[in-house]
Each structure stands twice: as structure tokens, then as C-alpha cells.
Length: 484
Image (tube, rainbow, N blue to C red; front, side, top):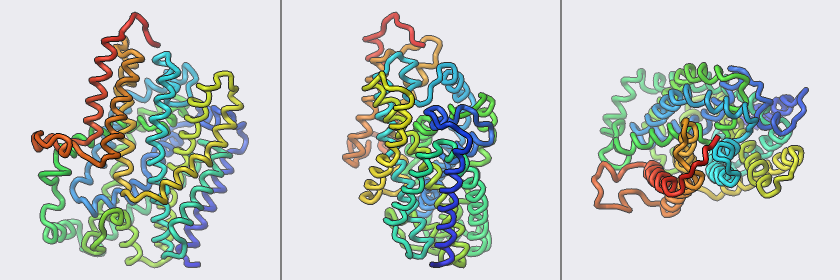
């Protein structure tokens, strides 16, 4: 076994042990397993939310997108910063309401606000549909990392199965506490590795950042700018808007805010997170450095750019360290996604069908559903071929459809009825599903549109249809009922 593979194997074993130890001294009832007893302070909430945000998408997808697409990759830097600004005001409000009413999941929030358990089921279904490709993203990244960093000694398929088993075991035992403990290690290691790679590789191969960008411009003119068509300014702006609005609409992100013990945590995090976002620049630098040094990667292969360049540059032991950091970017968010998906199925769908079910029954079912969700995701991972970024954008298009209904529920006088909420969410999700399955775009559907509009992100168009349906149906069904 190579040095690289030994380091990766030791990291996976360490994650499993740490995840299991996180349970010590805690009675893992539903609230403790899902939201940590609402007792996490600033540091744990920070690393938990960062653990969800900085995933294999950041590690492989960000560098791969820079390698394969150039300038448009900067959308990833922009949307996070905008989302953190929104979170400064939004998250404390959500936390206060959830604590007051002892809510533990995102669908609970919607169901309580609109006095509609059925709406909670709809939100849960949307969340599960979005979470599966997000979990596929993590497993896909895990397979790529172990295969490349381990010099092919372990296949992608075997690596995916091992990762799925490890994360399933510690999630079933320790819940969100296991995720939080492992997130601390993950954030420390990924910060060190990404900063080193983003500084060393451009300087090693080109001498300076200026020289690197000059070389790319000479070899691929205008590659670092937004193109006139496709990933144009219209695409860039609409994608930043879509992903910023959907940033905290993911069920695992929404649910993790319930873990905090006080609302000031979110304002402190909103101040710190944009600084953490700067790490992405160094991820992009690695992708840019690989353009001329590892040429010829196409399609899903662009996600290999960081690892291919690392393998040809460093000794095996250090490639193992890079691979270990990458493995953590898959396992930590993967664990949060598993918790969220299993909890939605047990707490919001099963409990809807069996309202007499006790918390103990729901808690036991949620844990039993963890391996089921993991198995389904592994099957999709082994059959899929999309790039990491495309998988994430598809999920964002789904979860962002919940945003208008959420914001309306926070107004002093909610103008949206439960029927309007249903209509808006269903319309938006249907629009995303139809266009995603048909692999089409706005330009293909409406060729007569101005060029600037043809490149709009399909998720934003679905959001507009969502708002229209929400407004029309609410106007037709509005009553004197006042929601909480």
C-alpha cells in the first residue's frame, strides 16, 4: 500500500472514531440526534455550516470549473458573500421562531407558519429530491479523490462504498454531533491544504500570478472573461441570484441553524464567513495553474484537474495529505445531508402518515433510514456522469423555489395563503424538473428572445413562474385566516 493510500485510510478511520466518540455522555433522542440539543456555540455552528458549504464542490468543483470554464467560475465567490449578507438578518429570525415552537426541521417551519402539515410534506419532498444529487456530488467527489490520490490502488467504486459505510455508521450513532466534531478537523486541514496549493502551484510553475494569467491569456484568449453567449453576464447575474437566495434553503443548512444556543451566533458568523470565502480564490488558482500543465481534460474529467496537477508535482505522501483533506470535504457534508434526508422522511413524511407516532419511534426510524438514503445515493453516483458543478446547480434550482414562501411567512401580515404556497412551489419545481430532464435551456425553448435573456439560469425563470402562481392563487384563495 502506498504512502498516499495509508494516509487516506488513516484519515477515514480517524473520522469514524471521532464521529463515534462524539456521542459520549449524550442521550440521543430525536432533538439531540438532529439539532444537537440546540446547544452549539459560535465555533461549532461556524464549522458545522462551513462543513456543509465547503464540500467536494469547493475542493474539486471549484478548481475544475476554473480549469474548464475560466472567468465564469467567479460566480462561486460572489454568491456566497451575498448569502452571508442575507443571513445576518434572516437567520436570527428563523432561529427565534424555531426555538419558540421547538421545531427541528425545515418542513416543520413551513408547516407551522402556514398551519398546514401537508405543506410540510411538500417541502420535505422538495428537500429530499434536492438532497439526493447533493449527496451524489459528495460520493462522486470521494471516488475521484481516492482513485487519483491513491494512484489507482483502490477503484472509485470501492472508495465510494467505503465512504458511504463510514459516514452511515457514525451518523446513525452520533447524529449531528458526529458531523460537528469531524467538521473541526476538516476545516483545519482543508484551510492549510488549499492555501498551500493555491500559493505554491502558480509560483512553482509560472513564477507569479501575473505570469500565470498572461500565459493563459496567450494560449486561450478571453478565456478568463465572461463570454458573449452561454455563461454570459445574464447567466452570471441570474446564477449568483439563484444560488444566494437558495443558500440557506437546503434542508441540512436550514436545520443546522437550529443547533445554535443563541441568535448572536449567526451575526458573528455572517461577519466571519466572507473572509473564509476568500479561500475559494486559492482553489481557483489551482484550477487555473492546471490549464496549461494538465491539458486535455474534458466534460466530467475537469474535476480531476487539482488532483492530476498534484500527483505530477508532489511526492506520494503529500498527495495523501491532499487526498485526506478532500475525503473530509466529502464525508462531513455527506453526513449532514444524510441526517437531513433521513429526518425529513421520518419526522415529516412518516409522522404525517402516522400522527400518533412517538418521538422515540420517529428517532429510531430516522436512524434506520440513513443506510437506505446512502444506498440510493451510491446507486445514483455509480450510474451518473454529470460534473460536480452541474449537480449542485440542479439542486439549487429546486431548493430556491422555497424562498418566496419562506419570506412571505416572515411578514407581519402574510399575503400568501397555504394554497398559494402550494401552487408556487409546485410550479417552480415542475419547471425545473421538466427543463432538467429535457436538458434544455431558455434559449432553446424561446429562440425569439433577446440574446441577453436566453442565457438566464433556468432556476431563476422557474422562480419567476413560482412567484406568478403564488400571487395569483393567493389572491383567489385569500381569507381572513392569519398564519402564525
